Image 1 (cartoon, rainbow, N blue to C red):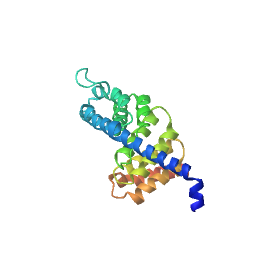
Image 2: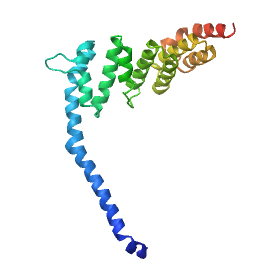
Image 3: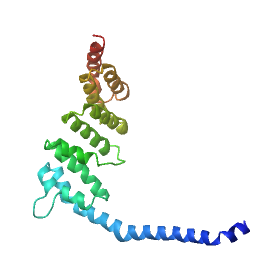
Image 4: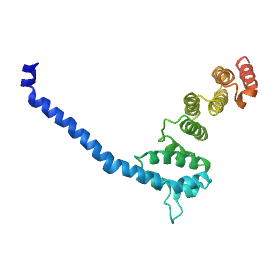
Length: 209
């Protein structure tokens, strides 16, 4: 080991210094740039959230020309922050509410989160937007993903039933029955499950026709 250290002393020292430089650069970036920008973004998005929560989607998207420039401009400026990521969700849902589905898809596809309510909800909205632009297969897979990630009685049954109905419309009755059966077995405490048998019976009838 002494011989190895002696022969490779310069390389080891150089590598160690390189690691220190990387760590130092990361800390400088985080403390001098990333953290302040994140804090500024959290403050700047406030009015956009207010407009969104009040259903004022045009103002949320494009601003009020006085105090807020709109979430679209905000996302361009703060795209690398957590608030910038959340803006994608607000923008996507706003476009969906306004019937601008292509734009909604563009932003909802950019949104991601570990949250087990908001992110699955965004996927369900994305799936519905895919339906509006006739991308039914993509919609089905997105709705199934939403249900799987959420794994709760609030979002999952709704997403699964929507996926089942779309599968039926595509003549895939067996797969539709599978989605409805998941609701019946796993989310029996959801109001969606109360009449799920009629969906199962309908798809079964079509399957055996």
